[in-house]
Length: 148
Image (tube, rainbow, N blue to C red; front, side):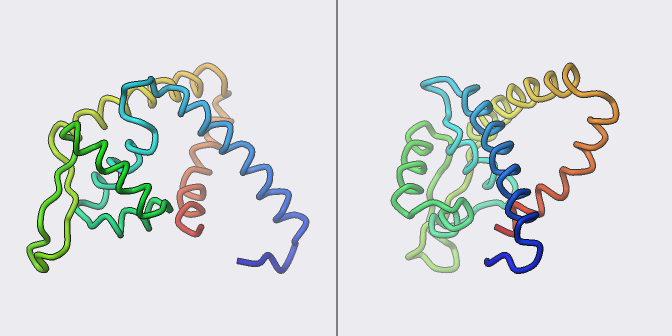
């Protein structure tokens, strides 16, 4: 999507946001230890939890990854019994991906540990006014993610 009006302002804001979100994402990725579910795997599990069972093609599109990348992620998740593949009841030729109970537990545990780190940083590093600003900005950030 091309930027038409206020180009300099939009480009500066886009650049600043990219840097800030990138730094936060890198810090969160550092919380994932080798041998644990990865950041990408957690993202797929989170999507399955939010949106329910779906096809690998839809997951790849929603996660903005290639079909090859989603297959690798799904293979890793399935090998640890975090997801299961089954035939689509409406079209037996298609495969549907669902999260298992173990997948839900692993996602819950990892989400909780990352949330605790974020909450600690918010509580210790931001003033009450800054916390309110962050709370106000969150719906905008979520909507922006949907627009990309």
